[in-house]
Length: 191
Ligand SMILES: [Zn+2]
Image 1 (cartoon, rainbow, N blue to C red):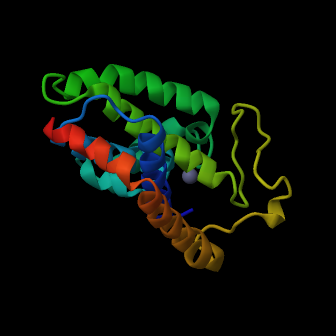
Image 2 (cartoon, rainbow, N blue to C red; image 1 turned 180 degrees about the horizontal axis):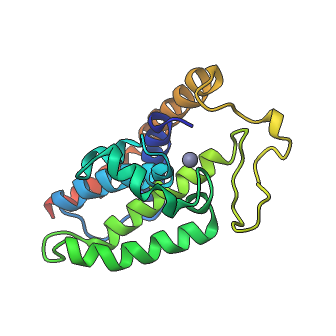
């Protein structure tokens, strides 16, 4: 899937989770950080590609990307596996308290938003032709449906004309249907 589709699916996932597992407290800074965090999480598994948008925010940009790429052990390998999710979660638990001030933002909610973005990326990739090396270092890939040729081709018409618009339709429907609950989450900001 392309970065744009991953962004949309991650945002829809965040709204869905926020509706069913609403936070008990929320401030404006945390909300903004959660939204940015979801995008970062959604783009992180593809950091194994030097052209990933996230590299533009780091010094050296694509060059840094190319330097660090060997750490990912190839495209759609470590970062698209259960071991990758575990390592990413460990890095976040260490990193977030070092870079965020817990007096101003709820680091737990931000951590959750990043993980939601990351996992939504893996779920979205599992319906693409390439499949997921979920059990890396074992080589076999998993996907849904099990027959690879029935799955979606990344950056082809089905993604652009069905998956992305479908995600936006779902998001609109979900927000309208659950507007009261979602508004009560936003009201936490002023309380
Ligand atoms: Zn991916």
